[in-house]
Image (cartoon, rainbow, N blue to C red):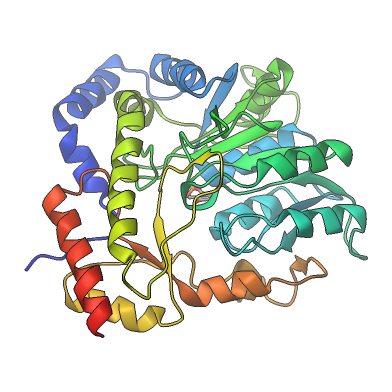
Length: 376
Ligand SMILES: *Cc1c(COP(=O)(O)O)cnc(C)c1O
């Protein structure tokens, strides 16, 4: 019996192989491999799809966060508030530019930044950290964070808002796409993301044209003009081959997100009779199910049972950032701590979810959820 895997970027390639192969051949034949027509076209197409004036491609989603922060003038001497329940990249990017991360807890129902914890640190910043200059909520698993409360808090306290959209390409809140609510938004095109390249890639979306110009310079040594650095930049470019691949995949993204939602709905129905809790959807939000994350105190046992039935699962994430060896004991935490984050890390379990899962495979997973979990 072949295993049903949790994510499958190879299936995403095979589904569009002829079109992707043509696009790669076109990019290779062009003789121009970095910052050329494919990237310019992708940046314009992604900006139009998202509904923002400007998109700047870069090397990966981690660099996108770092470039957005630097573009907004944030660096050493600034604190950036984010969550500990995220891909470590979110926090790594803050430290890359010399800023101080301040990690706060999540709302245990939606797994995104707890606005009450945010309000508390904005009203009373913990002693010993530099001034808070930015807030970086993560639309984790494809679910919009609570922007209804986070946006006004950022405005009131005059701090920048950067949305980490690495898991949420296409998610909406009250009909508006995430990535259009803040001062900047960052995307990853890592192969397993909802819009994935076949290698590394990332982008920053902004509405201020001056900010766009600055970030475009920062991604290439701080050049506004060739070979002249007006400020110190980095090298983080989205190459022509990846841009050509992303141009093929972008027109399929909304359909693929709809397929993810259909599979998610089938799982939610199957889970109704089981001790494994289905994920909640925020009111007014459309979730794009980068991951379908269930929850149980008996997570480890259920994971083993599913594995024995040929169903691969994942844990996103097994250890909060503030407990990881590289960060433990030195990264700043909000005064309320991160108890919900720590509980989630012990209990979450991600089921197989990618658009190319067949109806038969989805049915196999649903049947396993119903019978195995009831009987074990
Ligand atoms: C994937 C991811 C990133 C980083 O993206 P890379 O392209 O791997 O650098 C950042 N934040 C979140 C929430 C992610 O899931």
